[in-house]
Structure formats: structure tokens, C-alpha cells
Image (cartoon, rainbow, N blue to C red; front, side, top):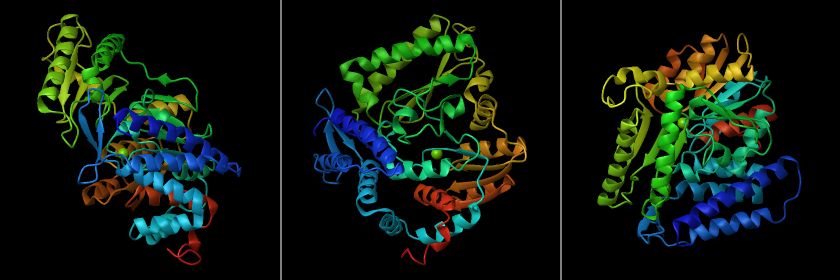
Length: 418
Ligand SMILES: [Mg+2]
């Protein structure tokens, strides 16, 4: 493996294999060859060229060298191999070796969750139920993770929802999620678009001029990224994420893989697209986050041709759609019954607080688990007034969810040596 495209191809293959493995495992069916495929993928990645610091050193289509920190991909592959080869009891010991304090945290979470089923489960993905990966494009869910979340999801009385700010389709969570059964509703763009398992995509309506502007923009950005010199920008950091009413394109990653003049040229080309669209009456603004350009519909939604720098306060209507708005949209769409019900909300960042607040405002009896060690965020979670608990890693959370339904959490520390 020398090309960066090979790396992504392998990760895509791992998603298919993992989906099948989780499926067979949950159905208690033997799976003689899948593990071998997964091992082969792990070995290929492990043996690929690396720099002195151990980062993957791959080539893009133009022959340029790109560094990739593959911690997430490699660690999660190892975990899956361990899970399927050694079995669940030993896998728990393995997790407790990776995460200091795992057993105690798990016990505490188990006590918090209780064994009575929840009516509704709303959760963020990255950093909450999925370990964090710096590169969205290859953040494929692990099979063990899918097994745990599936077993928990089945006990939730109403449709469980995974809600993320990332896009739903085209390298969205639908491709990255390997939960095998039609169990969870997957919602992207902060809950503004969703689909059931292989079902059609449903999206909240956005004003026609905004949709038109974003369609024109996405078409042009796609054309730009199709050029061989630019394909690399889909393969680093945030890549290209076409969310509902907002598009993100990376021009650099944390390793500075892209030579500055190339980033500069690319940024200029994106600015040119946006200014051309502006002269056609489509109002889009650009926010530079330091590595990415966020392309967001402006206030005019196309009405203020030529005034793209004016009146941005109004853009809050589109730019400030929160995960709380996403929850409201999904509650309505999916017919979720919240008032007076047992609701579990999980998150890991400030943006996820809106899910807790909205579930409470709809009258739910909300319990929330946040994956964070950040004192300030913990205080803000307390301030919502919801019943709350904290853990330090997604692995603790998903294991705790699984254990809470299997009723084996209290044995932790006794039979199992963790
Ligand atoms: Mg998150």
C-alpha cells in the first residue's frame, strides 16, 4: 500500500466486512473467513511506509507525499480482531488495559443507567459512542462497537437515533456506520436530514433560494475537486462534507501535508467560485477555521445579489440550526413520544447540550451521559438540571450501555478481572 486512495479503499472494505461480522455475531452464526480479511487489512496498513514518527507516509495521485496519523483506524482494527478472536470476556480485560479506571467507571455507569429500558435514546456519534478519528472519511465504526450499540438499541422502546453534525450520505454516517440491522435512525447535518436503514433520505426543508445556491455551489466545488491536482483535498482532514445547507472543504490538515502555495491556490479558487455565484445572485459566505473553509448560505439567500458582505446577522436562521432544532425535527418526523418518558441523551461537546435541553423542554425525564473530562462542560451539563453521569471514553459508554441490558454490570470486578 503506497497510495492514499488504497488506504481509503481498505477502510471502505473494512466497513463492509465489519457490517457482516457484526450481523453474523448478533445472529450467533459462524464466520470463518471474515476475520482473516480484517486481519489482512490491518496488516497491510501496519506494514505500509511510515516516517520516523510512525505516521503513514502515502502518495496522492500527483505523487505528493501525505502523512496520515492512523491511530484510530489501526487501534479499532486491533480491537475488532481481539473481540472476535478472544471473545467478549477477554475483550473487556483488554479494554480495561487500554483505559485506566475502566472497571470503576463502568460500574458507576451501570448503576446510573439502571436496568429498566429507556423509551428514547438520542446520541451524538463522534467522541460519544464512537472513538474520535481526526479524519472523517475513514472513521469507520468498529464491529464490537456496532454489536454493543445494537444490543442496547434493541431494548429502547422507541426508535433510537444517532445524531451527528456530519453529512448523512456520500461519505456520510450511513457509509461509516456498520450497525447491521434496521435499528437506528441515522441523522446527519445536526439532525436536519435522516434515513432509516437503507431507506430514503428525508431532509428538513430549507428556503428554495438557499437550496438553489447550495446546489450550484456543490456542483462547482465537486468540479474543482475532480481536477487531479485537487483530489488530495478530499483525502485530508475534514475532506469535503456536503451537509444540508452547509458545505465544508479542507485545505490543510494538522500535519501540514499540503504545501502552503497549493492550499493558497485552492482557497483562492474556492473564493472565486463563491464570488461568481454571488454575481449570479447566490449569497454564500466563507468562514475559515484554519484548516477548512465552511461555506454557509448568507442572509439574502440569493436575494441580495452583490451584497454578500452585508447583513450577515440574518444568516443565523440557517447557520444556527442546532442539534436541539434537529431533535425537534426528528421528534416530529419519527413521531417520538417524549413527554413523561425515560429519555437517554449522550454527547461529548457543548453542541450536544442542546439535545439535552430540547428533550427536557419537551417534557422528557432526561438522563444524560457525557463523555468528557472537561470541568467547565461538566458544570454546564449539571446546569441543565438533567440527571447526569460522566465517563472518560466512548468505550466505557458503549460497554456500559451493553452491560446495562445484559444485566451483567454488577459482576464487573468479581468474575471478570477488571
Ligand atoms: Mg461529538
